[in-house]
Amino acid sequence: MAANSGAGAQFVDRVVLQVVAGNGGHGCASVHREKFKPLGGPDGANGGNGGDVVLEVDTNTASLLDYHRRPHRKAPNGRPGQGGHRTGANGEPVVLPVPDGTVVKSPDGEVLADLVGEGTRFVVAQGGRGGLGNAALATAKRKAPGFALLGEPGEQREVVLELKSVADVALVGFPSAGKSSLIAALSAAKPKIADYPFTTLVPNLGVVSAGDTTFTVADVPGLIEGASEGRGLGLEFLRHIERSSTLAHVLDCATLEPGRDPVSDFEVIENELQAYDRVLGDRPLSDRPRVVVLNKVDVPDGRELADMVRPEFEKRGLKVYEVSAATHEGLRELSFAMAGMVQEYRASLPPAEPTRLVIRPVPVGGEVEYEVRNVGDNTYLITGEKPVRWLRQTDFGNEEAVGYLADRLARLGVEEELAKAGASAGATVLIGTMDDAIVFDWEPEAAAAAAAASPRGTDRR
Image (cartoon, rainbow, N blue to C red; front, side):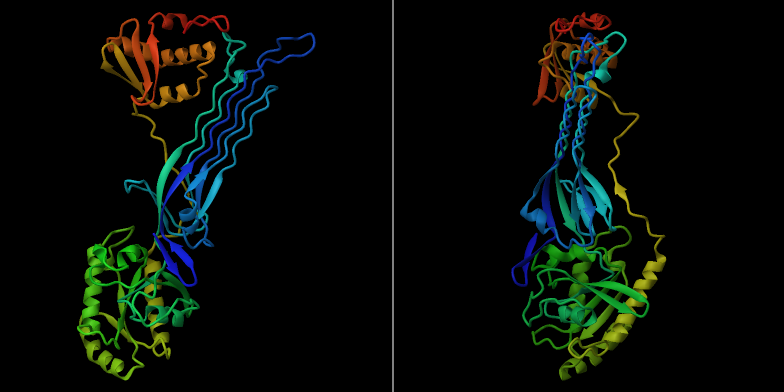
């Protein structure tokens, strides 16, 4: 979501990002040669790993605008290995700075990472592993492999980035209630201010100091009735309230709109907050402490109205402060009250965690390495992480490399599973997915040949 603000600047708090990690470099098939020693053994080195795509919290980044303009990001590939045991260089990771409070989601809404705290990192796309050179593939039976493994492709992903402001206090209220003026008076923030609705098109953040406590205040764009259902601008910015520990209702005591007064405005906003209620980490919006700020008491009618409605809010157990953003009346008391509530909340939190590296662990143990399924007349589909990865590493233009793949599959137990599933000689075997699979003709005797080393280039598998 992008919104215009000020003189052509933009604020973006939701983007769809396409990322591609680097491919791994291919391994090298090379034989050491020197004078009087034409076959000095394999010396082909491994390829380098592809570069990762990493998201990192940077407090100097305030918006996701850069990714709105350029939503495609790619990391460099790893370099191929060379002869003489010269390993290919790894691809450099691409580090993408994001604002504090960025949530990473999958396209279907699953939360992958919640990035809070300067320096917190999340590898959003993993680079492909480099292929092994023939020096690493040499064994007692295969002393000079005439092949190497290919590098694996880097991960490609589409993710959704959402920014949820990290503010201690959220100022909520109707458009033109004076929230922008209030945050400007409380802090050094300079939001756009005017006397018409929807002046604020982006959340503004200000830093407030009261005694020994320093806290941040978010001026959230105006809510109206029905905001939680998409009316006005409120729905686009309600997510910026979710992280705030304290809510401040800014109520206009000088409005001239018919049918509006501070009490009814308060109830409308409360209903919208409850309709939007979500639990993100600690507690729902309706359960957070709040204060009532009766604004614009510098206007004669405003002060009179504030005195009339104050008992109603106090009867509900709410702290009430009469202020004027224009004359700064009551702002000191309000800032110290909010500081006390913020400090109380902070004291209830567990000790702060150090900067984190967010990882997505790969499941181990209890997972089926592969699966063999009958998908037709003497046709079988093999799926699983290992077989598919081995396919990607195989150079199908090299018969010895294909034979090595057959050895690996046989050691994994694929031959036995095919026999159990009822496969007969000449069966069609697909490895991968139905839409993108490599097709083989299965010959059962190939497993028996796996134990014997074939001359280079004559392996019938």
